[in-house]
Amino acid sequence: MAFSGTLLTIGSTAISGLRSYSVQYNKLWKDAERNMAGNISASLIGVFPKLLLTFRDGLTENEVSSIAALLNQDYFSVTYFDPQSKATKTANYYAGDYELPMLDKARGLYKSFSVNLIPVSKRV
Image 1 (cartoon, rainbow, N blue to C red):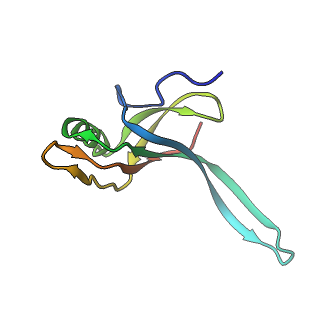
Image 2 (tube, rainbow, N blue to C red; image 1 turned 90 degrees about the horizontal axis):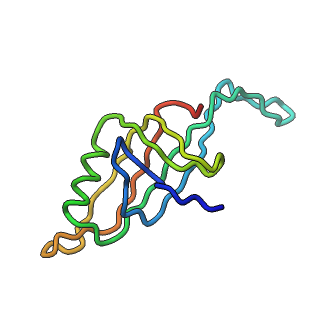
């Protein structure tokens, strides 16, 4: 059955206006090296799920202001849908750089924009 809950919550705020939502499972390795036969030897530190978000065109000034206030915190709690477990997970994240391009100044609307949420620690 398809997931029917909220895809993303920052703090206690459910995030709306998403055009696309993607989870990128980044693996962090240590002591990685290849031998002369080309085989790799490394120790997995963990999996760090990065969230790739794109917001839709036409968000209002108030919507963009609210989203920016959440993203501009140093670290924040995120509850997100994890496709691997088919359930929600909660972890601490920070936001990568993003820009807010204006679509229509007279109506106070903004163009689509993207931001990545980067985990502070590995997935548990």
